Structures are given as structure tokens and as C-alpha cells.
Amino acid sequence: QVQVVESGGGFVQAGGSLRLSCTASGSIFNRITAMGWYRRTPGKQRELVAVIPATGSINYADSVKGRFTISRDNGKNTVHLQMNSLKPEDTGVYYCNQFPALSRYWGQGTQVTVSS
Image 1 (spheres, helix red, strand yellow):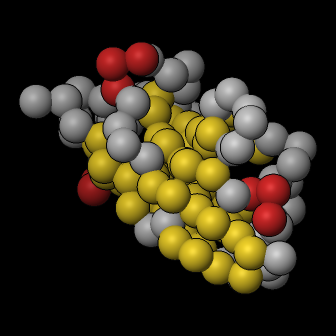
Image 2: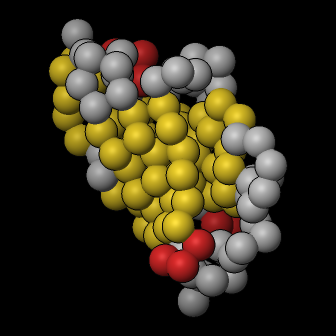
């Protein structure tokens, strides 16, 4: 069964940090698949936050550059998102998926709430 599980969200004050993790089954995550973290913030459509390819350059949305770091552990089928200097506008539900995303691979996401 195809499965994506995101974890690590929570409630944090502005300026704080959180580390998100995503574990995906092998049909989604493999050594040649680009993986991404996405988020849906209040009043907005889901947006791409960060992409990590199998090889090559990592890319970030302008809004998170210098604050967020994406990484992957191919041996554990896991992708992480280290989020530092969090801002209230980072509040939302965070998801991981392939890049480009496939609709059938959306998981439940993990809620991140940043208070001012």
C-alpha cells in the first residue's frame, strides 16, 4: 500500500524551530525521485516550499530561503525539513510528496502553528 506519513509539527512561538519528517513507501520514494515539502497556509492554495532532487541543486521558495533546510535519507525513505526562525506566516499544514507532486500521494500532513 502506498503510504506517506508526515510528522513533527506543533505549536511554537515566532523565532522558534521545528523539524518535520516524512516517511514514504518505496513506490513513492527512491534514490532517483525528487522529493518536495509543500504547505497550505490559511487563505492560500498549497504551495511548494522546498525540493531536493536525487542529485543536483536544492531549491527553496523565496519566503523560506535562509530559514528552512531540506534533507533526505535514502536508506530510510525519509525526507526532513528543518525550520528555523519561524514566522506566524509559516502557519499551515505541511505535506511531502514527489516533485512534481502526484495527487494520489498526498498524505494527511502535519500542522505547524507559529504564534506571534
